[in-house]
Image 1 (cartoon, rainbow, N blue to C red):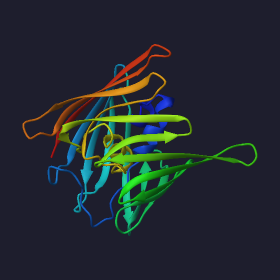
Image 2 (tube, rainbow, N blue to C red):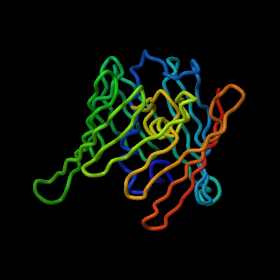
Image 3 (tube, one colour):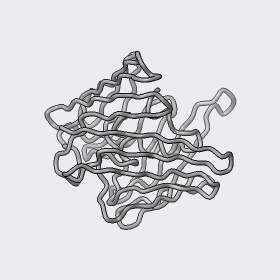
Image 4 (tube, helix red, strand yellow):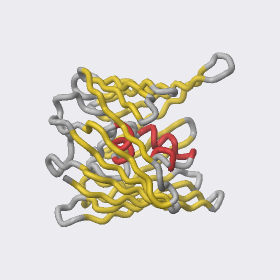
Length: 249
């Protein structure tokens, strides 16, 4: 079980949004609590538990992470290794699969070279467009999907792909931070998130009865100690829950 695979297919565009823009080697992590570094994340879903341990380099970029399983995921072992070169980097997993992420010297993500190539566009350091290039087996041997993003007061408001519009809501009394629901998948899978909202994400919904809501607990320093992600699709009576537990360095 990998964290990115836990999203229902209808929410894949949300996962694409979160594919992380790692900073250049000389830029440290950006978060509202100073140099907060997540040490471990325990992801629980359907009786399976994944334990992530994160290791950092001297610039506070994620250097590597180990992934072990428990419960129905018992015996699982994996890792991700991040190798930085200039303003870009590669990510290699335990199966020796490697992909490359290109960013500019300001740490802005430009392109992710995986099976479905992702190209990012920005305005005022906010993601405005994500283009997904997908190979196919029939002419013209590719398809292109584009998602457009709208922002307001430092928060992502909508993500629109074709006729599907996803609307985001926030807990405005708290700032966004590394363990929140929008940043975390990018951190675990790609090192850092492309999207950093001013406030804490509280949920996302479409007009088709699909949605996610997020419930947080906090430690005495205001950092997220747990996150419960509630996923639903009323059109097919689907409900699911993921729970994330955190520790910090």
